[in-house]
Image 1 (cartoon, rainbow, N blue to C red):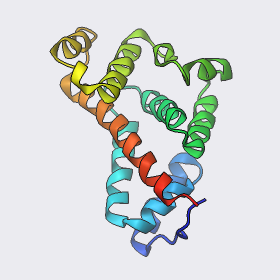
Image 2: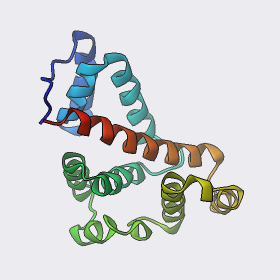
Image 3: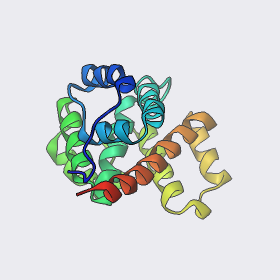
Amino acid sequence: MFFIESNPAEETQAILKRVKKFLGEVPPHFELFATLNPKRFEMFINEIFYLAMHKSIHPDFFALMRFYISTQEGYNYCREFNHALLVKKGYSQEALEVFKNNPDTLPMDERHQVLFTQAILALQNPQSFGMDNTETLENYGWTHSDIFDAIDHGAFLYRFSKILKAYAA
């Protein structure tokens, strides 16, 4: 899968055990990340746990964002991993099939849908995202912190998919 063999440092073993307990498995790109840069991997995992317990954004939102962006970026493992996670959570194959190519069909409530489409807009066309967009999101009850977290996670996914492709065998 990668041209560098994953060999996570001893310091990341406890983190990988937490990941396995949380996700049921350790994705191979997590092991690669832990091998390449243990400190940044720890920061990444802390971010994932933060998002999974987000105070106002449903954790499925972030899994759906990972599914959507990995589909758009052609990162198959991440797409399949998040697809399986979402199906286990009760999302239908049909809803995910429609959503993967149409961000306007996020299978969540309208409030999350608006956050999702605005975050994708900010990522794909940042110069067209502005005060009007944040005001719209505030009208749906989102804070600037929520908006930042949604956009930031998406930006991370775009960046991380490029890094993983660089190391792909």
